[in-house]
Structures are given as C-alpha cells and as structure tokens.
Image (cartoon, rainbow, N blue to C red; front, side, top):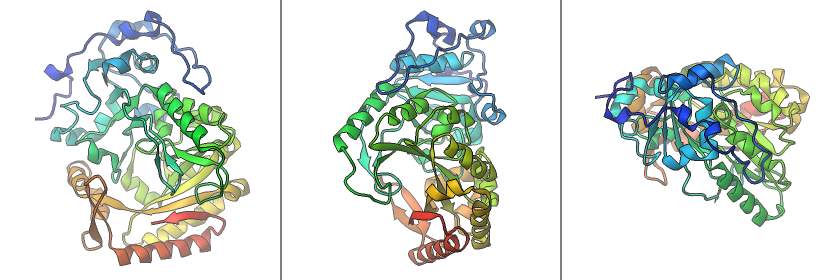
Length: 417
C-alpha cells in the first residue's frame, strides 16, 4: 500500500514546526572555505511560522517554472543536517513544510523501496526534500567530459527524465537529497585541486585546467533553487586558477547569471530534438530555451558547452538530429561557437527503470525499450542495463558525427559513445 497522500500515518509524524529552527534561534551560518560570505537569510513570514507543519513551500525564485518544479511540503532530515548552517538555511526557505527526522538519507522506508510511489513519481519529486550529511568524500578520475568526478552536493532531481540513471539506486522515489556539509565538500575539492598542481598537458577535457564534474547525480541549476550549494561551488572555483567546475543541466536558472564565475565554471546544456525532449525530459526547460540561454551564460562569465544526449534511436532520428544541429548553427552567436564543445551519448537504459516507467509513463518506453536493437550491459555496480547493440551503436555514432560535421562544423565533439 502506498503511504497516504495527506501525510498521515506513523512514518509521517512531524518532530516540531520548522519555525523552531529558523535562523534567529541560533547563530548565522558561516561561509564554506573558499567561498564568499553567505547572504543574510530572510526571516520567515509570520503566517508561515504560525503554520507549523502546514504544507507548502515554493522555491525561492520568481521564475514560474521554478515554482512549478518545487512545492516542498515535507522535508526528511538527518539530525546533523537539520541543525547545520546550510540545513537551517534550507528550512528557513521552506518554512511551511513538515519536518521529519530520519536516521539516514538513504533509508527512508516509505520513500525507498515503496512500489506505491510509482503512482506519485513526479509528485514526490515536487513535494519532498531530503537533507543529509555526505559521509564519503572522494574524488575519482573520469577522463571524458571532466578530469575528475567530485563529490556532489546533492543526489536526485526535481525533474523526471524518463531515462535518468539515478533513481535506479533509490528504489521507486528520487527526490532531491541535499548534502548540507558543503563546507567539507568545498574543502575536499580545494585540497584535491592543490595536490594536482598545474595541468601538465592538454587533453580532451580542457587544454589548461583540471575539470571537476560537480553535478554527477543531480542538476546544479535546480539545486540552486533550494540553497547556496551551487553558488558556493562556483565561488570557490573562481579562486582556483588551475581548475574548473563543470555540470550538465536541463533547467535554465537565470539566477546563476549573477554569480560571476569568471570563466572557472563550465555549464553544459543538454539538448536533444524537441520532440524527444517533450516525451522524455519531463519537467525540464524546453530545448529552444536552453539553446537561447547559451549566449547570456557566456556573457555572464561561464564557459558554455553542450551535451548531445541521450541519442534515442527511433524512426526519423537522423533527420531530427540534423534539424537540431542546424538550429544550433542558426541560433548561437559566433562567440558561443568559438568556445563550444560537446559530448555525444547514446541511450543506456535499465531493466528495473523500464518496469518503473511502465507504471507512470509507458509512452516513453515505446522509444526507450527496444529489445530488437539492444543488448545487455552489466555495469560496474551490478545494475542490469541495456544499450544498443555494438554494430548498431557504432553505425549511429558514425552517422551522428557526419551530421554534426555537415550542420555544425564549428562544434568540437569531445567524444561520442
């Protein structure tokens, strides 16, 4: 049985009103190492304080799309996360949400492993937020779009892309988990950057800087609607002359234009043919909006690259990708083209996610689940994935490279697989 939608039931007991943890009840947060000071936190409105556990809490942005994306009604928090400076900032931003203590952000019984949540796949993403403390801080090599994968400041997303790999590991629910120990995350990355020294030679990631992917399991543009974690990372990297932050996004958050990255953050707008995006990129910014935003982000000091992903093989895919690349050529100004690069990623799907999607978005599976074209692929963590058969994939990569060369010859393809 799925949990009641009204929040009733023993697992939903609130600890106390969030107003009890608002900023004036304790000291103001300190800025993480390497970051600019945190802005003053707004006091919660009097009616929100009085509401106690009453739902709702919209994202702190005037963007109507942001308000639709996040309507936080309950926050599950580890004890250390809720009393941390960043945790208190988030609770103040959503003062009317119910606060529920959990032992671990990974073990929330009515979220993780609850098949009933398939019926509420998108609602959970919109209305539920999890606060945790990231225990493991490690940076591992990558070598594709980034030299290194940094420990992310979040896990999960408010968008609902049907092919996303993150929910495979979270058991029928994939709300955003925000890690509140951003000071430790920034300090860890800073120490790693210092140990690397100057990059000895160019590679496909960057000619001079060590590139760190800071958003592997989430979307930093969406995370910035919730708290200052993304801002703290951008501010930290602008003070590290040998490194760059990098993250992919499908959400145009214009608040990021005010963060002054000074060329030390690479934003990668993920794009695909709009008809694919409308079917598969649920709750994301429209593809034309992502493309149109590129010039503004470059002017604001970001390096702007693209992800051509995922490439979904279905009737007419070649013509639609040709049209998309032609659109990039038409719309993007010369300055964006001069510094742009992209990666091409063909779809990898997952058997368990296929079953989940059949419960909430079966139309997506008509193009994602193509057994006649796909073969099994066992991932390093043991997941049962499927990808296009070797000969089909090789042919598609070759054709897409040829299409890009014909319609967007200025676009460097970092890699395609």
